[in-house]
Length: 80
Image (cartoon, rainbow, N blue to C red; front, side, top):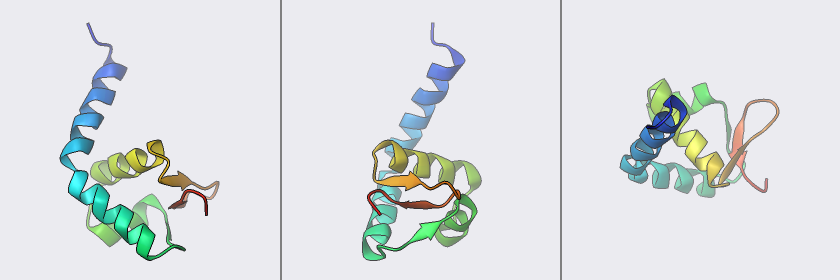
């Protein structure tokens, strides 16, 4: 039996997989604009995403170490 945490992780992974084109698009925009720094709210507005989708996307990009979250809450390209 899966715990609630495992179910949540599994659901997020399934959602992330279905959002692959969006992940690639956002990665591309971060590559094209090396200094891009966004809060979660700014990312929502820029890409027209709902709160949950935006959070899933940003967390997926942090988990893959493409992005990192700075101390000020901004999501920036890892290594910058």
